[in-house]
Length: 418
Image 1 (cartoon, rainbow, N blue to C red):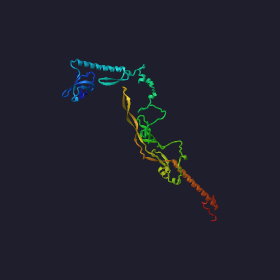
Image 2: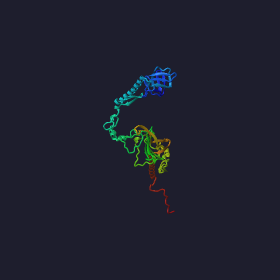
Image 3: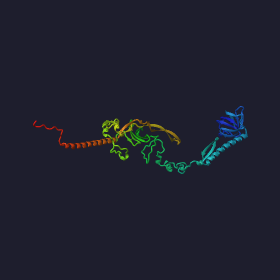
Image 4: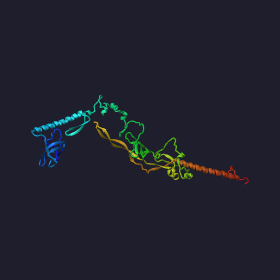
């Protein structure tokens, strides 16, 4: 019998195989076997050690060196040799002895044991280390099991309640299909400085009917739409400055403005109020957005006489859209093996950033009220001065014979003698 699998290379006292398995069970490659190498001239060696599946130690030393890819043959038995038969038998019994020793280690050892099969070392748990079922038929918790053969019993033994299993903590994506309550804070972690939307989705298309989001490092914007129709968005903005902007009418029972003198600096009476108010118009108009009639003043005209009454708001906002995106989910297959699957979820993304150049002027009508009030004060002062002058003139005329009951504008009646 000979062994010729693969090829070899040699240098010194070592032969290195390619595609070989010198330690395979049943090959009977052992110390003392003869190796014939097909070089020119042919070289012959005796094995002194089988080091691994790809390495042999031989004698005498290799000379000259054997190039890689050289064919060879190992004589596995000496024909008609009692000595060779004895060595083969000893090698075979040695192989079985190693296998039985490894099996004994598995059956009687503890923890992990290492056994060698076909020249390769394998580390496996000993039989005593394997989990043992208890009287209930389940693997105890102390051995990594649940201590039960039922789901309810497993949850009880592991101190897991139905509420804990139904928690969304640590989960990615998915849908909660029933109402839920939160006791304590609800935190929305935004992306960078903004975003973090809260959506109200149409049930069949999952498109946004209304949503809220954060922008500009802390502004909160509520958005309503005409049943998901693009271009119908109305934006209600809560700004970091404390301003609140709405695109339509604000209806309320009462509205009080802070006007405490302690909250104001540089209080100055409006000068020349009558001159200013002469430059203004009270107008009626139709609002372009709603088509509804209204009345008031024009901000650009008021800016010329009372710029303190003018403000501005953004006419534009960030726009978002709902899109489907794939994402990876770690789960288990039907055999309980961990796998990663791709699922789809609806997310909201920034479609267009706000154009900060689009603004509209606003009017503080409390400021207009202040202008009108100061105009009334100036008129009252003028009327008071006129009344004083009139009284003074009447007193002077009475000295001159003026009769306040006589209408001096009526012509005198003609004499009868004429």
